[in-house]
Length: 125
Image (cartoon, rainbow, N blue to C red; front, side):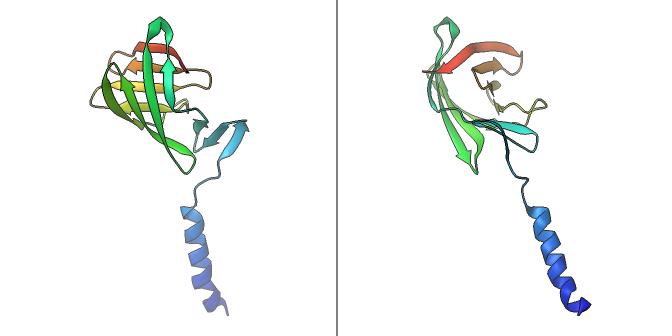
């Protein structure tokens, strides 16, 4: 009887190891999974301080925003999600050096090489 149960138990244990941890809602529209926050933020046009404008298209799969398409100053960029120490959503395009950081109340575009803001206080229009 024990011999018959062992293969089934082994299969059950292996499948449990492959499961993703459940996303935990920490506030309305904010979830945390694997130490990374996920904010329910819109795609579309964003207006920033000093008259800067940009357009974001978010690519969401399994409730995780894993990539954004950024249109800024007449060019298109694809920024990939890069897990951050703080857990805040951080997206980076290694070729251009652009970094986008999502906060619940605003977005921020940085020059990833110098860490200087290129567009700050960006909010959905």
